[in-house]
Structure formats: structure tokens, C-alpha cells
Image 1 (cartoon, rainbow, N blue to C red):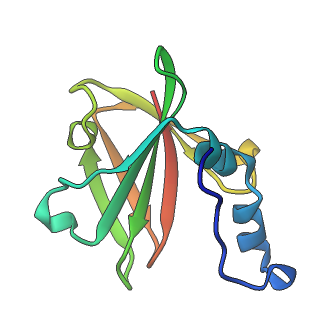
Image 2 (cartoon, rainbow, N blue to C red; image 1 turned 180 degrees about the vertical axis):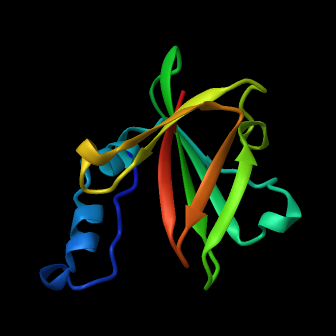
Amino acid sequence: ARAPLIEGANLTRLDPFTKALMTDQTLIAIDQRSWESHPITDLPPPLKDLRVWEARTGSPANSQRYFAFFNLQDVPLQLRLSWAALHLAHTKHAATEHVAGNMQEDRPLAPSRAIALSLPPHGSAVYQVQ
């Protein structure tokens, strides 16, 4: 069994965004059904304030890859990161940005060799990558 999600807040007084995040079925499924998950620890030094976590769901023969990006800074973070830096093949990859709380708003990205990120201060984003 996977570890439970832990929230350090009064669950009866959550703001709408936090409630949507904590009840998001895609994020819960990634947390509970991933068979491999780990941080990407060898990012280039200029990205010292970015954390990246990879998780795989499905079966080893037919897995879905997810990457979560976390901005640790007090300021917005904009960057372009190659998929190769995340240990993916040196080819184009399609991705879908997951919008917490509303799967209908998930944003597909055209296949490319890199991902462009714009994260608010202490913000995060989750992408499914093919």
C-alpha cells in the first residue's frame, strides 16, 4: 500500500483551491497507484530552487509518466528544461498539464524536446508525459 496524503490544515475550513487539490482524482491516483516514484536529483546548478518528482502508473509494459515541478522561490520561476534533463529520450515528447480540480481544463502541449514552465512563487505543476 502507498503512503496516505497528509494535510496539515483544518479540513472544515479549506479554501476552494486547496479543497480541489486535496480531492483531485488524478493526483490521488498518482499518489496511490504509482509503482515507481522518485526525485530527479541531478538538475543543473542554476535550477537549485526547482524540485522535480517523477512517478509512473500503470504497468511496466504500459506505463504513464508524470512529472511534478515545485518552485521553492519567493519569486516566479520561468524556465525551459529539456526532456533529456529529466532522463527521457532525446526526442520530442507530448505532454499534458494537469489542472488540479478540473480535468476538463487539462492543457495538452505539442510534442517538443523541452518543456517551458512558468510557476508562481512556491507554485507547482504536474504533467503527464508521453
